[in-house]
Image (tube, rainbow, N blue to C red):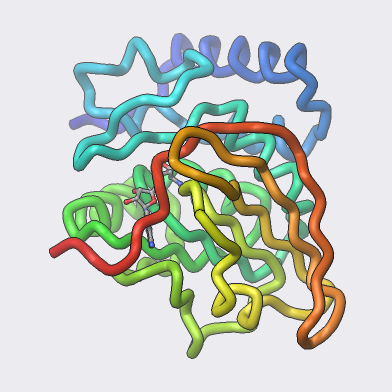
Amino acid sequence: MDYQDTLRHQGLRKRLVDGLQVKGIRDAKVLAAIGKVPRHLFLDSSFIQFAYKDQAFPIGAGQTISQPYTVAFQTLLLQVEPHDKILEVGTGSGYQAAVLIEMGATVYTIERQKELYLKTQALLPQIGYNPKFFYGDGYKGLPTYGPFDKIIVTAGAPIIPPDLVQQLKIGGRMVIPLGPPEKQVMTLVIKTGENEFVKENHGTFVFVPMLKGIVK
Ligand code: SAH
């Protein structure tokens, strides 16, 4: 694969960003980050013509790269600040991690499917993004690396995983799609005390399910 970002790609990306703005994403920093990440390099080369459509897309192992609107929306809710320490559950293609890194965050990302973990760990550093990669079960988080300023879950979860709340700093934010496999409510969890949090609902989305355990 050759890792080119041509003027044509940049033009398509500009149109994607304009489209997200029309759909209500107004945060300049989020739009700038999406405008920088070469999304076409996250898809297999035969699918490059889909890279800058505002759609989810298959990335292998039954998983998808999230729709750009969804990535923008979750990123917006997270209120990323430079130097934030962020845990991402569901590395997948690595696209969301790249967007967070563009915003100045330090990203810890965890994936349960070994095939995807290996593929993304090999690709991302080659295009200039260096999150810390982990192969494991996101329900457990990363107890030895926490606490985190922010946590983003990029798979649909049936419950708020208690281990993740525990690994969130007080005052920290977690964005997690909650609900059954058919559809989930985008939920913002703000940790207000050692054993307290408040929740806000932000509309309906459809994600691949957050599953327990790891896949070898
Ligand atoms: N953030 C990704 C979206 C990937 S789709 C991107 O930008 O491309 C969701 C991912 O979550 C899938 O790769 C899936 O394997 C992973 N996943 C599901 N349950 C998980 C769990 N318990 N722990 C870690 N990863 C999980």
